[in-house]
Figure 1 (cartoon, rainbow, N blue to C red):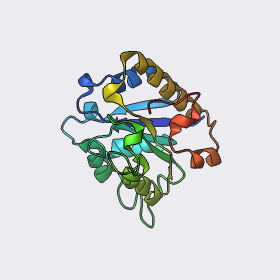
Figure 2 (cartoon, rainbow, N blue to C red):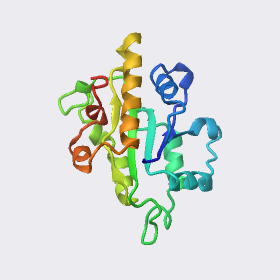
Figure 3 (cartoon, rainbow, N blue to C red):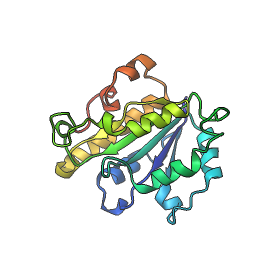
Figure 4 (cartoon, rainbow, N blue to C red):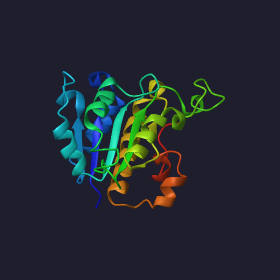
Length: 200
């Protein structure tokens, strides 16, 4: 059984229907550790030793966050700057994270069609997540396809539990190592690998 660490970042969680629901639905899920970065570090003073110890204890690392300005909330960048140290996470002798998996769980206001070369944003989600993919590569990790919830601004309240259920199913499948490397390599979104698709 793989151990999953969720590095959660939402600076205005009280205003979020989606992420609040996602967290509620996975509470107590065996093999999954939630690390709420804004709750843990409201002053952004990140404890790198604590975070590195958590990384060593887990096999799969997921950044969960709203897709703000084509990227992540500020604390994730702060976390990367302080935690992923040269000589520990990368570099000639920096091999602490070798063999682990890294991925993103994100929500977007725009629909899936908006994130295409001909769509409103002009690029795919995969294009925008290049810094995370390259971070995984530099740290000798395998980058996972993202889990993406599209169209949150227009989502009906009745659709939120469906998204939450799919998220839990995805985490359980990752934890139980049900996805082969070949299947993961071919997927655009992790959503495709659950019983149904989220958003779109």
